Length: 154
Image 1 (tube, one colour):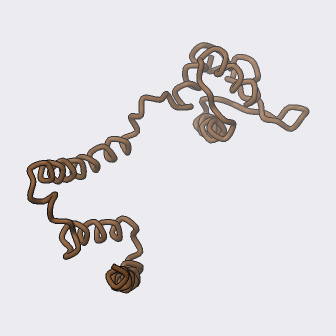
Image 2 (tube, rainbow, N blue to C red):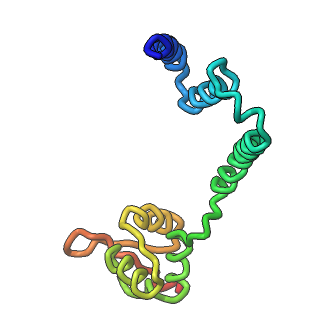
């Protein structure tokens, strides 16, 4: 048994050198999976019984489904309302008729809209609203920006 262990250890050392040449961890994992699936040291008893074949088929089905789930996430349909949507709602409701700091906005959204945003999640969107002339901003006495709608666009 010790001889088999030493032999296995040497093989794994050689395999590690080859695997490390691939930069992608995903490629490395696929190669290891393939070797364990088709390699000479694989326990062949699960391959011969029907249960082993079913498990193998289920694994391959799961792998095929994974890219579909990832592609749906890329489309941006997570179900969560983003900062732009919430800020647009606040603007339409007249919330920005008064000057509001980012901390005022975050607190209001948390209390009235039951949504939690961090300042860095809102700051970029607020900046875009200012650039697009949907909101205006001025610095207050503390040096913080206050966001509001102009009187003419109300």
